Length: 515
Image (cartoon, rainbow, N blue to C red; front, side):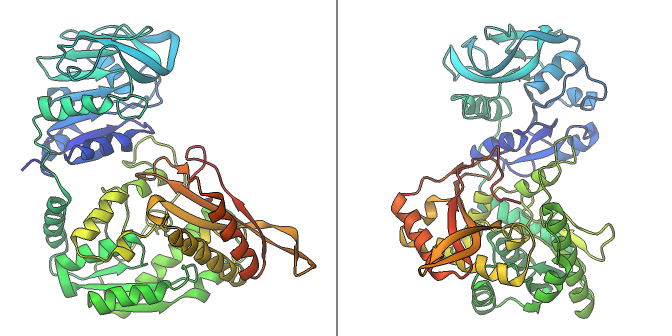
């Protein structure tokens, strides 16, 4: 079976699109994994990849300390596809010349190519592509030939057929290259010989086996929040090790309305999982008192979260593993998916704020999955739709939606507004069209008129976005009457709010959460 044992390895050179490349591969039912650009050839050999994709990146091959792979990867006998910077590395490291382009190519270009070229044979010529580079290849390395060109790039696509090395100067992974998936199909199916048989049930089967091998007869402590990620992680680990799993549900005071009742009903009553409830609300709120800076909030929440778990582990007579529902997007936004050169956007609860020395090993069985894959896995494991289909909820909870100082009264206000927003979206039949909907309580006050009297109360902002994997997102276009109903209900029913805004920022430039 072509699957996890023979992945397509994406070497990350700091590209903002590395995650998207891995995503495109999985859309073709082939398992992909992102690895650091400097992973040794020996480590790669151990992974037995079906193929390697070298991502783009912001560097120039001529820059001092620019990221470069182990040169031995070119001797592995594995097909390699270079994208943008990855293609320039081919040329530079294998004997060609790369120079600063007279005209920097950024945006839409048109590729003219050899229809017989193995990588490009499924595409029309000319075809639209998306460029983003300042360097260009001036002389090809020995063994390579040009298979495509644009107005400013004579070597926009190159190939060394004998060694199965291919490169494109454009980005096939983005939507602005309409036929980009055909390049991945040619590379993955025709060149690498993958059969497209990887499905979520095969992931589940292999993940359960790996969890059993990793855990052995030891004990696992899992943080269960009721969100999709932790719920699926819990169900997967429980399927693997059964009663060796103990789940702890921490009330950190930053939960959605009715959260604890839902979690207990689903996991205690339906799955019969050993679930311990910990009321740590005061502890979290005391630690957050007076703190307004977003990163500091996240790290405090993460640190207290781990402290609570370590204490529970001690009370339970020692636990060996701390399980978390960390996903790929969590990791890439916190540092880089690989420890590589990607920029930090923000730290996540699951991957930020962890103490340097822990008394438990981390168990993160979902860390290589995208959100929609996690939902699919949850269904495969028998989780109900009210859990699997829920919108994402951040690890730090309402702590990153209560902008400014966090106090209990403001959290209660935010909880009530959020519950109304979600209820009205569900009433309108729009919930499943939206990737994530949320309310933020802003650190400003507004003059209003309520009950014929002047009010001076807080302001909230509604946010709803569409997305497929949280890497990019667009704001959702509500029917005006839905927003009107939400606004009316919040201002009439929620104490301390007298003004409602709607956030129309996409990602990028904004993130989905405000903090």
